[in-house]
Image (cartoon, rainbow, N blue to C red; front, side, top):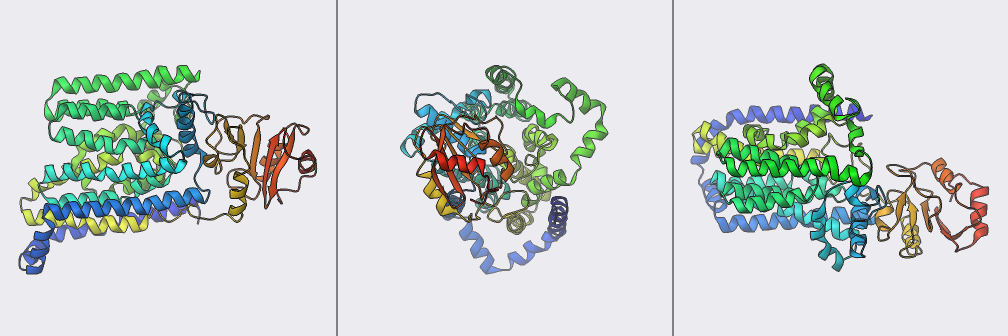
Length: 534
């Protein structure tokens, strides 16, 4: 089955399930009558409404989430399925900073501030200093995603005044497929922003303005585009709560940070425009041309937005919560800039739930859900009908998790748990690479070699040309996931044949080092190419 057919069948399946659930929702008016006569259900409901029981259940769910996704991300990494883009990038930044080279990098740019504005990474530095491993970042991300369920529970409990419903909302978040895929796919600061957004909204809910401002400032430090959402937070505060003074402050603060970082700081350090703009080149080469296309060619934009993969993306975001997040439209619209940039991007991964790009949208799907449930409560009037209508979303969320299970593979992503045939040899070869020396390798081994000042990737998705005079070249010729055999040959053929020697070669693995090892095997490797036979 090709990708297009797979997306069409997945879209049909999800919409069919959602349609069936919507029909079931209309029948909830009969459930309260039955439930009122059922003494066992009454007793179960009373137990569920006990706050201490809810806290214990929430704690148990968090432990299960951390254990399950912790196992997934660590196993994925140990089996060489994590990637340089972006796990190695983040670890190299922290390792270089820890060793006196502030935010230095080499995979994309010379300094991280030429690519993204993410100074909040410094908050992770003390933990990384104690446990210097890519696994530390993976576990921090899983813990942050799990912790986000706590303020979400508090928001739901405060707004809905129902412990069972608040628990149901937290449960839906923890099994939300997009959350699982964010946890699974390497490490990204957007994931760290999820609990910060929830904390900001909880402070907003409690009218703790200083605390809300504090959490929003932290989100600004996660990534340059967070400024847009902080600005819209300000608009939301002005429109929905009539707090003009603080709303204007947030609007100006978010706008200033976004404009300063995106249009001056990053391009100035980089020396050119940001490469992310290439994803929107189908609308124009410049920001002005893109804006003109949006307003003058609406049919072109519409055709792009209603393509199968983008419709699937929208359904995947809302179906697990029964589309009830749409009732919280004012709150959901806070994420509109992120949602639209994902939908408009000409990038295979961005308009999907399978990568990191949905991270800033996720908080507002659930905040919209909570506020939408509050509105549904007012509309239904019958308290029992409201509660049972909401509880019907739980099986729908579970069905969606089963269909979009992050623990399974799909056509769009490389395998998370597949073990390569020569994994033991790879582990042996990694021990032969000297510390600190510059290394050229491929995308799936970069996370295991990131603790050095200079690290480069050949093959896809490399964004800068690897040098032809590195200290070490680490290649697994049997692994052609990110580069084909001809690509390996094209690179090694550029190396100085007299300057390098082989320090390790067995089972498809070859480690080449400048000024070390045996030169004759390297000459034989280059001159008598065996088509990646090992």
